[in-house]
Figure 1: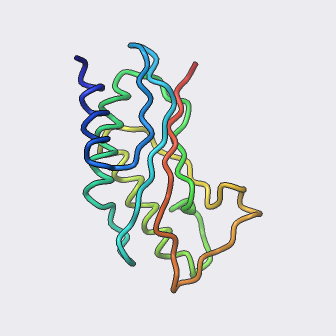
Figure 2: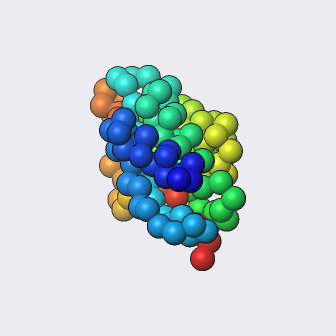
Length: 137
């Protein structure tokens, strides 16, 4: 069995919350996975790092269209001070993706676009973000 299949099974068995679609060799299929942060920590938790690593293994040799992180602002952009924790989390997610060998992501604060974003307060930052992986066709 291929290593990607083993990574998909391992991620599923650990309950890491990814959407893994089994398809034939050479066409990995687009997928996503969530990342849940602990409390007010900006650090990418261990289970999410393992999911990122499994995603990189699964995607090895594929041409990416885009990796999009929905739920966090662009870490390089100037943002409202309320979003400082979210911006720090975005930086950590980008670093974890890069460390796994995945391309730089684009960030989108809200799934409804920036105009539809309800900015979280400093007391209730979003704890979940979704990472979408799209491949060239």
